[in-house]
Each structure stands twice: as structure tokens, then as C-alpha cells.
Length: 456
Image (cartoon, rainbow, N blue to C red; front, side, top):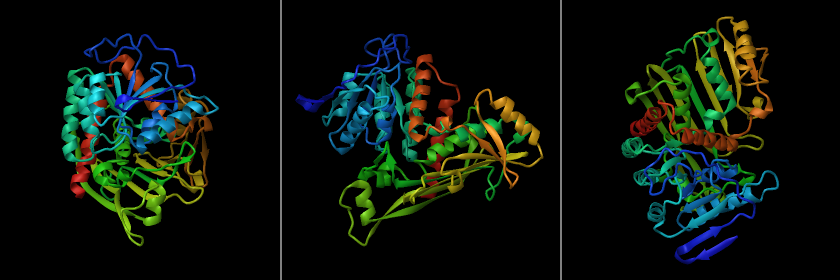
């Protein structure tokens, strides 16, 4: 239901009963105009231009107020966001019960700051201005939960360091959304790498043969929540969206740090960028029209070259890593986005493949180098079974082991947004994060923006 008022104010009310408030959630921020220590977590969504902004609300959370306060410019991106959440409210199975109050004046940022309708700002949209939104929220006492990437160039990185300083001074929780940490094959790759009897220690590697490789293939045209994804035109402008070295690579660089140095506080001096390259993906007239729903800004027979593909080679504390991202227009029928990863240890290689043989779902394989079959079986059946019930091993004809995972663990990319959000809410309630999270976020964005700087 839509109700229009003056100053372009829209109120969208769900017809389902709202969830009860969680009364004992302590906010990390105590200096807002009104005390929030006894209040539920109240979300403010600013300029939700990316579909990830809606995916956060595919689930509901007992700690979160059922009313979302949205401040955004009027347009198709806002309408898509509202339509997506309405779809979650109206679905027959496990419907959500979100109420949305939306301000659409041109001064939407100033109005958000003036009203302070919530204590957590969510932002997922145009990446060139995201850090300015974040700074405005933090400077005015709002916690921040932001989609990646937080910044897309070295100038943005300097602002990011300032943002973390402000968050620290004001005791605010500022966090980015790293969904890939919740993918089960990646979790088990990390777990096995931490068992010396199986993995040994990580190799140092070389430029030609890195110790860690993370590669992913993505597609401009895809289906999200069962519907064709219409991307905004700015998505194909790398000055706004960011290039292939600073967008999806954020996830891969994060995983390199998270897996190779778990719980270790990193510093930018630990990174040496060796090589970085950007390459284009070309969209023709019909493809651009299909994925945006708009008339292309070029003539038939011409193409739009998008610098969406990136590769970087660097060392982290002396360990060689390679990260690469490739974008195609659309996956062939029956296929999907893919991920490949390898961690090379002195006793074993831990390999994630996601090809046709795996039915395009990520699967972890273990290649033993030291004949430690019994140690691997013990690790799976004893050490890891208690944490991940149901996992098992199958030995393949090529000598590798396939880690079998129950279907219940394969929840999919969209469901990971709820898992990350629940993690953020856990930090929010505790009033703190692990001491390595903030410095390692800084190192992550130093790595991506340094690669961009070198590639240019």
C-alpha cells in the first residue's frame, strides 16, 4: 500500500503483523540524540541502487525493528528495491513483514542525517559515492553496514581510513558485507588448512605458481529471486561501479586474508603488489538493451567495452596470491557463475571447483602429497564432524578426495546475506568485533585499490 504526502514522502505498510522488538540490544553508539541502548536495531537504507540492498531483507531478524526507513532519489532503482521487498512480504512461504517508510526528496542524504530514524545505515548502490555516504553517517553518529566495495580507487581509500578513525572515536560499528565467508566449501577449505597433519604449512609460492589462487566467473545477465535481473545503466560505467580489480575481487582478497592468516592482524606493509591488469568485456546493442531495459548509448553494430575483468598477483606476508575475476554476458543454458580456488600446502592441496562435473556448485577436493590418508579421515570424521555433521569423504579414481557435504549446507548466495547480517547483529549486540576485522578491512581495500593504481 502506498500513501503519498508532501515533500515526496511515501509510506509502504506491510499487511502482515510486525515482529516483536528485541529489548536488550546494546548499540555500540551511545552519543546519538536519544539513547538507543534499550531500543531495537532500526535500519536506515540510503540510496539502495544495488539489488544487494534488498537481499538483506529477504529474511527478518528478531533484533531488528520491522520498519525500514529509506532515503533515496525517486527512480527505477528505488522502485525495484520496493518491489523486491514487497515480493518477500507477499511470498506464500515464510513471508516477511517489513514496513517501509521512504523519503524521496533531492535532499535525501541531508534528511536522513536530520531525522536519524535509525541507528544502523545500510548502503548498497553506486560505489563512487558510497564512501561519502558512509562518512556522513559516521560523522553523525550512525553505525554502518555496507555492501562491497566500500571504495574503488586510491582517493577513496584515503577517505576509508578516515571513516574507520571516526568509527573508532565514536564507538560505532562499521562493517562490510562479506558473503563468501559463509560458503561451506570455503569454510571447509579454511578448516582443513588449519590442521597441520593434513595440510602442513602453506607454501610461499611464486609469481608463476602462487600459493593461493582465487578465480571467479560472473555474468551480467542472470536471475535473482527467480526474476531476470535488470541492471542500472551506471553498473557498466566503471567510474561509478568500479573496475574488475576493485569490485568482486574484494571478496577474493578477503578470502585470501581470512584463510591464509586466520585471526592475524594485518598491515598494509604486509602487501606487495607485483602485477595487475584490466581487460574489457564487450556488450553489443542487443545485450545492453536486454540487461538494462534501456536504449543503448551507442549505435547498432558498435559495442560497449566495460573494464570488468581484472587479475592481480601480490604477496601477503611473503605468501604469493593470485586473484582474478572474469565477466561474461550470460552463462550458457544450465550453467552459472563459477568459482575456483586452490591453497597449496606442504602436505596437501585444497582445491575448490565449480564446473559441469560439480553441477556448477562449489565442491572441495583434497590432493594429498604425503600419503596422510588416515590423518585426513580423522580430521573429517572426528575433528570436523562435530562442527559440520554429515560431511564425509569419497576417494576418486585420480587419487583425490572429494569432501561430501549434505545438501542442507548449500544454501546459495542469496541466503548468505542473512548469515552475514546475523553476524553483524551479533557484533552489534556485543558492542565489539574481533580485533583483526578493522585492520584487515583496511588491508583488503589497500590491496584492491593498489592493484587498480598499478593497472592504470
